[in-house]
Image (cartoon, rainbow, N blue to C red; front, side, top):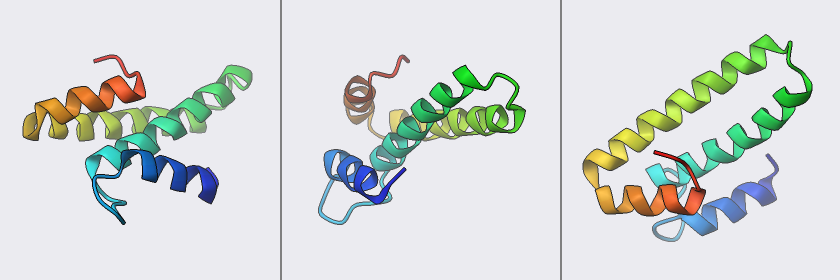
Length: 87
């Protein structure tokens, strides 16, 4: 992911200026990487190490979403709607 992509995602999901570490931003970054890796794996079915990385990223995103749901359910629902993630 290029710096430009990261900046755009950060601006869209940040909660305040300079926010790079909130759950919202982290989930957005992971979602973008998951989408790109999924596309890669469609053409490279035997790339098992990348598949393992994809599973780990999905697990990390799920953990962050569970945390967010526990802390602020309204924000959780807004985020999954913006990212078009099923819950």
